[in-house]
Image 1 (cartoon, helix red, strand yellow):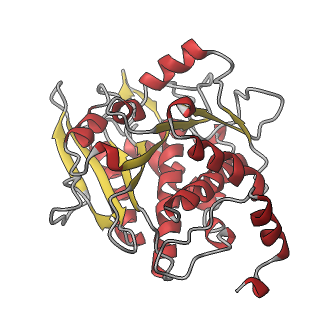
Image 2 (image 1 turned 180 degrees about the horizontal axis):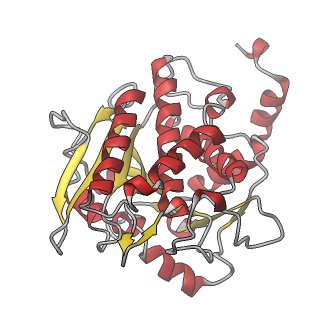
Image 3 (image 1 turned 120 degrees about the vertical axis):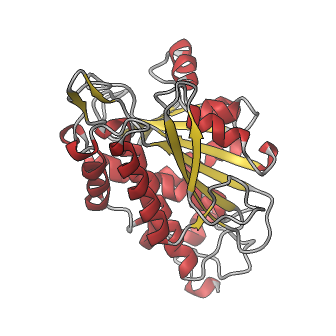
Length: 333
């Protein structure tokens, strides 16, 4: 097999700087994931963002017709791509729907959308990829599109689901289970995330990582001099190999992102921001959890949060980097 392996890859493996290339699956290991990363593209990302932030969805407030339209769109994509339904949140049960319905404390009806890809052989380990899809809706007759918050995160979630389903369909099956969750009701005390956590049909200790994607689409608030950046919160509370995977995949696949773990060198602000987003719910259950974001900007929670502020080339790069990192973790044990 090594005869046909690219010289650069052999050299990287010799030095120990390359990501771990997945050997424990019973399927043929995928040594070059670039093709499947290429399935994630700015045109598709933009299509998702434009649909979810269109005025016809009226801001995707939980419990509204626009929110229901977003639910149906995401569930339809999960089915189209080939995810298995996981509406109960329990892989051991008979799941026939992607929808996990619930009531918010204030009475609104919310619906998480949950699908998964089982490992090649039985595995008790899970990766959980999450993003909330609700937004503010209409306030005093004013439309809040929520393109960055958080149609951008959902667009990446959907693109990742499609790429990983393509891998499975081509016979490259993972060593760990992957769960994709589109949360509802973030704007109502993160109720969707709390319901998912409470209904978990797997032990919290079985979740290797929760990667939450929230406000991922702009390059308006760089922590340094380059717009090619991404902010990662929670890295100090996850196993070191996860952070190494993020860094190694960025360098090995020449993504060129400035990965900032300091959140603008503000530990206090980082702690506050972390508690405001859904990965904090699973983190409270001692699940290793990361928030991946491009940060707040002047358009956050404003009517000007439209598709025009999205930096599609940078969003595409971030999404591919996330794919490489999740691929690395999903295909190794």
